[in-house]
Length: 327
Ligand code: MLT
Image (tube, rainbow, N blue to C red):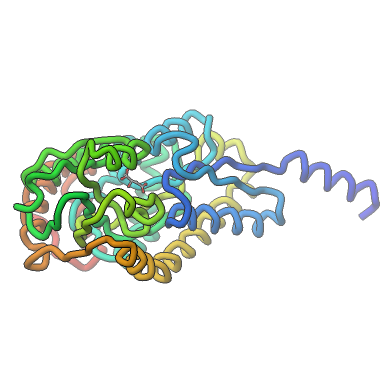
């Protein structure tokens, strides 16, 4: 290479170098940040440092649901958010939010990284104008509240619980006998602090990243939703990239997905212990959660068959997980 061609190559690289903006709904220390950092590291490695990204934590670029619209219209490059906040824009991913469908990290990895996950990716591009390129795994959404221990459905009845603006989650609490309060994620900490609501549910890692232990004392180990948090990219922006750049982004997303499973396996138990050490009182639901399971699966699943693309969509997931299908 002559000095001139080196100069040309360097100039071309710097002209096309990109620093992507990545919205993150949660605070530092959580699975979303871990996924984002792993993605940036992989992207830099795969592009020889040409492309990188910056994380904007704590909803600085907008509430999680708003970032889907921003990415779809091309005003935002990437966002990391909970799948329940994608569902309003792409109903078929609702299967991942149906209560008691995903019952472990292994279930979550098998579905999202397999054929069903790929079909959800394709459908979400069509429905919402965003492409899922990576998945974070955050653990079960445990219930927290500031009033008293909850081990049964009866214990829930005097509590005002915040839920995301997600019909499946709203109907799940209704099946347990209470009317939850739908609220944007970005407003949740203040609402808990000011006691506008008594409680909410999210994984231990999210409770920790959002410092909810400062405003919530009681934790119930509910297992109704295993939280899955995708990294989405604006399809408009993605299509403006070269084929090589697209592949680098897809590969970096895959690397970050693998790192996310490792992060959860390494951190969840430690974080749970840390929250207990900070004074959170953790209990299990009585009778192996059976009352919660029976009410939610009986009342909620049938209501959403149409929304998720038919009962067969749920059965496909159950079959892939080796579980009995529904009639
Ligand atoms: C929510 O509860 O709205 C989300 O699950 C929060 C999150 O993204 O961690």
